[in-house]
Image 1 (cartoon, helix red, strand yellow):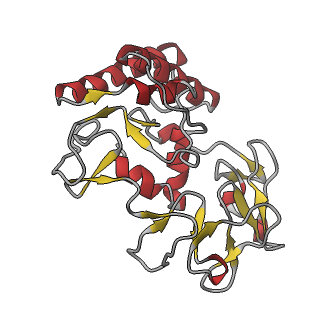
Image 2 (image 1 turned 60 degrees about the horizontal axis):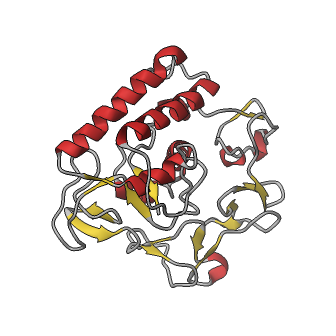
Length: 268
């Protein structure tokens, strides 16, 4: 199970970005004053998750049998939430509402404040643990190295100084460090703009939602499922939104069937 902080960190790594993006999805809601009950949330997420995997023809359990998938997944989620409540974690219906209102999906690119559907009461700087579902920090904090910390403290905002050195804070969502030798976090290049070059001088990087078309060295919008994608010398796994180009066509990623579904993190 991904921890609250791992979702932030792994989203920036290409191999893990796909797994997280496919499980967290495509939307973020405004803050709500009320939300679903625990049972309603479990049932709704089960329906959404099973429908998504059914559309991909997933063969892994519990997705393989659409007639039993919803009931089995709903039971799994209720058990998960019961574990959180047994550990004294507090259910936040307004956080849960952010998942329900966007059909179980969540877009980290548009969400600047993550929340925990089950959280504790410990404040920033207090000792914590994240065994089992959720953590015992308040909903806007993450348990990092046994201490409740702000989820934004290790990420640099647009225009602020940054470093590409290992171990230095990362730029925020959609930002690249030292683009155009600015020494600051800047938005990645968009459609038609030159790709950012790597240390070898080769064009490779674009902003989120775009890929580097190697032949021209410019950024292009990522390609939808079923559409043609570059092959051969100019192939690029990132050309497809699914990060999976098979025989010149963007295909669903098998990782979607294997990836754990987000059921504990929302957005406020």
